[in-house]
Length: 106
Image 1 (cartoon, rainbow, N blue to C red):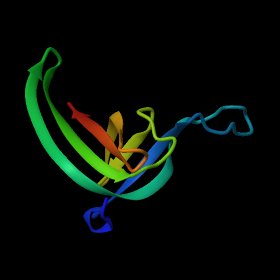
Image 2 (cartoon, rainbow, N blue to C red):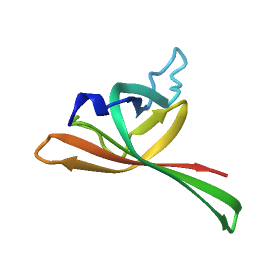
Image 3 (cartoon, one colour):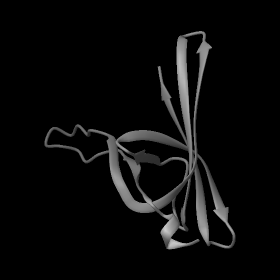
């Protein structure tokens, strides 16, 4: 993987249960896990009708260097939009990762 092809900046977020405050109530939410450089391989958008109404799905595929611990439980932020990581594929023998992400808007 060439460094020149890693022309996008993405942020991977992890869900955290939050620390309890003085009343013992915790505020769960997403917190930044890491920010890395990546290559945008594919970007597509599909619009269709569902039972709940019209919806659109944006699917993005990113390639990046290998990172241990990234799973589909994480979330990806790109250009201030949040995407669910649907699939994590290892490229070669820990040479890189391919992240398939999906955004849903209703």
